[in-house]
Image 1 (cartoon, rainbow, N blue to C red):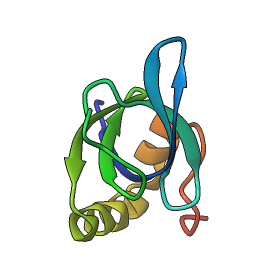
Image 2 (cartoon, one colour):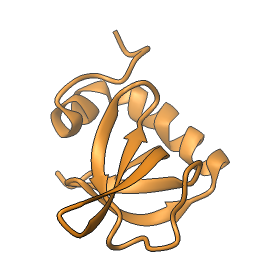
Image 3 (tube, rainbow, N blue to C red):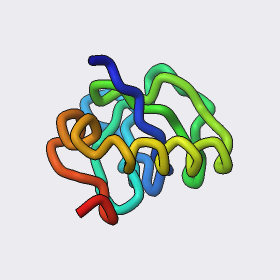
Amino acid sequence: MCLGIPGRVTEIHEDAGLRMATVDFGGVRREVCLACTPTASVGTYVIVHVGFAITEVDEAEAHRTLEVLRAMAGAVEGELGEPLPGTG
């Protein structure tokens, strides 16, 4: 399954010449490459797939999507390696 998960950019930095970010997925934080989303900034919500932010999304849509994903806890855990907080 290919799953894109929305998260909020909390920090941006450079690593080996790549624009990278720490992205918060409702309590789970991961390092993400921002090469495909050059206008993303701290506070921006992005859709992340296999470690790459592939597009920006508005905050309301990000929250709606996270709620749906919480209902599909197994799929999210498989993608992130751990469950989202609140999915128990």
